[in-house]
Image 1 (cartoon, rainbow, N blue to C red):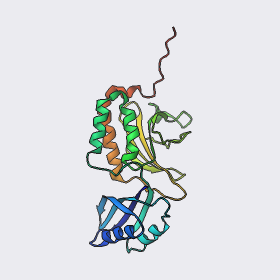
Image 2: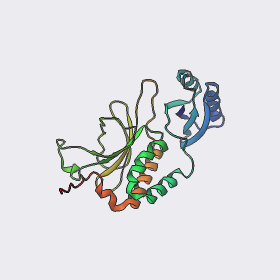
Image 3: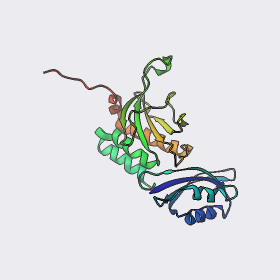
Image 4: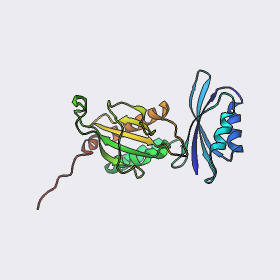
Length: 234
């Protein structure tokens, strides 16, 4: 299976090589490394690795923790293939080619792009700012196939791009479309054996850019999301 391993490490020569060797010795086959951040002498790297399905990750975590200055921020199962250049542009092209299903295309594709478990396009009541907490919250416009049922959404207001973590340990990234109270919510769930990392700022920025681009492409179609269908009596 594919695993995503997020590591914070000293940004100095040799440390990345130590991490890579430790991953290899533990049985992980590295297929991609993405640098999320380099700041103040530290770096945050995401490793996508092929991991033996029957193997336990405790040895891997212990090996990485033994490297001076290295901290493991999360290890979780990655859905889909590793990120490649051009995936975002390809997704936007698919949305533009079939705008009738554009929102569903976006929601279904985003978990694979961000190594997440599921995604939901939620609709927030337009008067959310004036509510005292007693009114209904966000409703689901479209959910990806791995979304849990029943679905409990985090508090997504105020509508701005950000990451957040709920009490059960689920990490979310939130990005508003900028119209019709529509917001995209992406989740990484906590499990007993693996612990996902929170969404990094670069991941939230990437999600926000995708959502804004889709909002431009889909335009007025987004205003119809969550609107009950009109029944015509014969």
